[in-house]
Length: 177
Image (cartoon, rainbow, N blue to C red; front, side, top):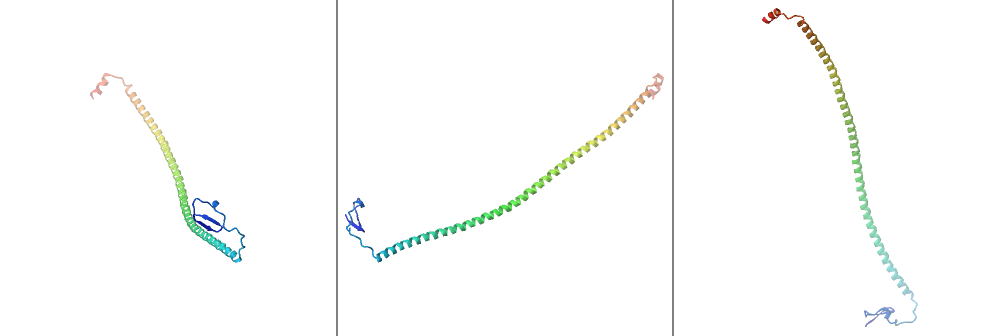
């Protein structure tokens, strides 16, 4: 077993040993007060370590700030693209509004003109039916007049044929003809 001494503690190189098993330090005497030079050296060492830590923290913060600036630039680009997209959407919505209004007006005009055409057709058919009824009435009157004339002529013919008595001598000359 080798015994290595570092500071006031001795450490065994045996893997099974522990610090609790280590013997007491070899020097147990009173300590001398540190000299000004030793004290300054320790303070300078602590300052050097702290300066290193502060430098590492500053580097970390600068790296973080650099990443944040990159993110800010990317975010600004995204916002600019979103804003452009919004303007394009608003423009297309404006033309959509125009299209909807034109379509609505066209639809209303088509409905109004369709109803007007239907009314004109119904009116035309009603007038034609009325005129047809007038003509039918005139035709019926003409048929009635002709029927009355025909009846009068038939009656006249019957009267002419009826008063003549039938005699054989009068019947013979008409048969000879």
